[in-house]
Image (cartoon, rainbow, N blue to C red; front, side, top):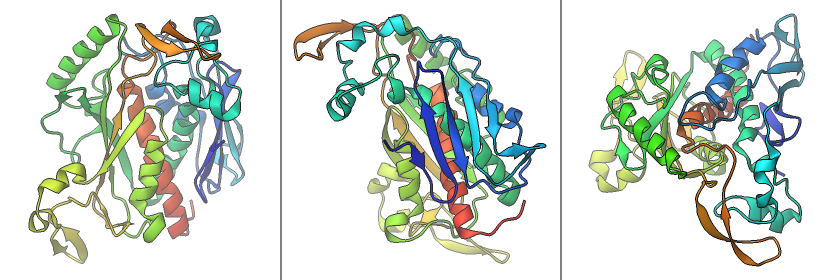
Length: 360
């Protein structure tokens, strides 16, 4: 069912939204990495529901439990199992959805493919599945930071047609990102976006936007030509996130407005290091990291489940209507920020382990 990601650093997520719990098994983590549940909890707290008025009000502690792979505070090199228990599921909110497909949700396609689906909270198609990704991503971040000084920061760049006029990905800090409930490093624009999302929430509707992510201090040489290009791996990773609908790296689609003379990143020497004067390539050339900052963007659609009446079809094929109930994000962006960071970290960690021999 496509629940495993990675080559050497392999992550398998498990669990359903309203089951007993969710989590991940991480295989390929090098031994002797200092690791605690607190290391993982930081990003889980950034991802968890109920943290502000502009996300789902579901109340979950999302406390990480490490069940295997760590002894006396260090990794063993064996599979690490991380479990987060579900404690605030309200399956009755989804009873009508057992018989009716939610527009633009995974209900109809899961039913067609498998002949069965967990309609309670969406099962595996729920964003709650991403707990395992974020937990594994926290481990990947720690490895990358320790062995190469890699820093990964994502933030909200756009909500619907509200766009931050300028964010410098080369200098943005985690403190700026975490300074507000939206995780947008521009305080003035963040306030406007938060007000807009809250208005959409009170209407029972939803809205989407764009998350930008920067990875700094990425070593040169990660990624392989042709089918295993680094940007192709990153695209697959972030496009596997719930509600993701678009991917850009470097200049992205805006690059079509430039000529080759304008777009090319000219080289120069900084001491004994090869650098580029611009970074339209987004830190990757020929599918291989070039040592510049990797900068990418992910577009997320409006949340599919809304509290407004919509036309739909029942499981038996009858045309009908459905008004969503339950607790849902009016905008996925604030909680998608740590999800994007996690997927970028998983790719870079996997590629680093493929390229380098490390000792922790």
